[in-house]
Length: 210
Image 1 (cartoon, helix red, strand yellow):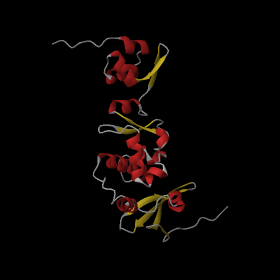
Image 2 (cartoon, helix red, strand yellow):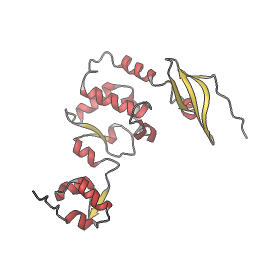
Image 3 (tube, one colour):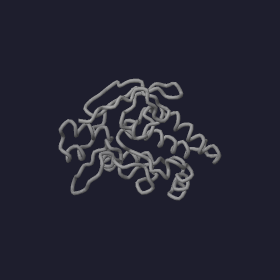
Image 4 (tube, helix red, strand yellow):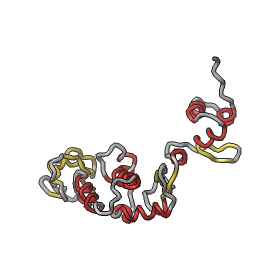
């Protein structure tokens, strides 16, 4: 059996290990102090592999440095790119658990260079009002897995949107609701209440008495 190495006091990037806070099997959670003064909890695996090098401040500084000269930091497209990077790399943002924690990444071509992302966007139909959508929600952000979509189109592609097959046709809940003239929440309620697919889709909504 290999001897476990105590990493307390060792430095990884900008992080210095303070103590072990959690340990389960071979996985450890370490409390670290960042060079900027912030204290964060980091997985030992990510620390040793170099995946995590700071509390998030290093990434912010790097982005500012790399993109300070292209003149597009105040554009909507830059905001989309910046949000995409943050939710896949910065565990301190609210939606990291749905992206970075799930293993969703941004390809190196886009991650390192906003202009590369900008050029792809311009060649692939970007315009104000659209948002970036992954064709396969279990894969990361890259040219071959992304497209621009309206809010409605993106809603149809969410992981929470269940597919329903009826009369040999498969659509999402949102698409069926739209086709049958139903509110999506009404359709969801009916299915959860145990209605058959036929009844849930074909039963007209009763109009409220005035």
